[in-house]
Length: 326
Image (cartoon, rainbow, N blue to C red):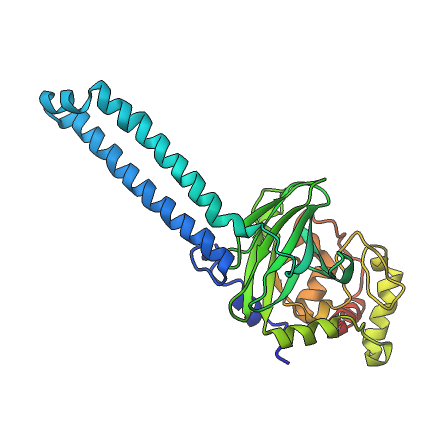
């Protein structure tokens, strides 16, 4: 089974080239958006050339040329009829081109992503829409299979955007929107919140990991098994004790333990994620400790308090516990 490793190089590969290459599609739905973008770029170029030509005629053209091109008939055709016709045709064609982004066939894999300030709650759903696995800040999908992502927001307006795999969709409080993604090849793809949602908006990213179908199924099966206490080192066991004592369990959930908080990201398998802090840090022991000790200096105004009172050995124990949750 080929699973992504939690390393700086893996995260760099997943999020390389930010801003993301929006004209580099890796799936059928992003390909539709790219085609539409190139057509719009072409039309804008033609309009720019036409406007520059008209401006040149107005400034430098002869009186005869200006009189010929400035008549009422020319203005009617090039100022009203042709632009209206082009815009109408473009509207109809673009709607037909991108309708597949939201059209539900019924055989797609279903997920739900909830926008929060400033992170993403992820739910894997069964055919009836029930949650079968909870995660955060990462989506894992099988190659070659369309995925319907239900978009909701738990606070303010966010926007879900994975440029290489699909279009962009707003997440509006009180409303459920749907968007389809599909990857044509295995790999990691960077995403970002594309709607200003507060001071740390630019630090609200995520990663989509596409697996070969058999690997994805094995990955999903492994997610349904929480880490057993017998698999933890002495330091990690001390970290689990501290996790409950300092209040982490009030906000975070770790399946199979007493920690069942829901106001923060699910940490059941946090040790296997590519990133921390919603796509902004590589997932290493050092970054885990730094995030626990003072996340506010890394992502200001996020909802996790800074634990500056913890001693170095306590931070190490918590980091060891988080690292073991795979």
